[in-house]
Image (cartoon, rainbow, N blue to C red; front, side, top):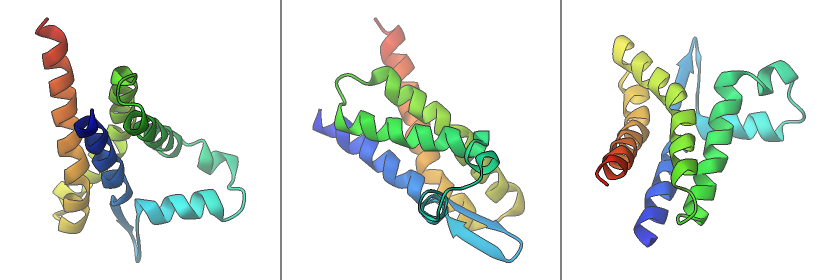
Length: 127
């Protein structure tokens, strides 16, 4: 129980350290989220963009999974699936541009999510 809770909490913390860089600007995901949520009301087209809203909902579901690990097998899986496109894209960008900061910041979440998804389906089909 406690191990699951720590696993989901580690995955949540890994979502906060995603690094992105464009042009002369750069930011971590926690900085972008803070700016998006607390700098006044953002425009609807920014807030409801799929690459913004899905990871935000995924993070909320991941926190729920950390707080209630008994009830949330599918919730945790769904949260990982919602967060994977963003971190998969960051990982891919870091890989093709050989930008190691982007690559290394996306790698922990990618590893945790792949391990969880494999463990989830292995456990599910082993019955």
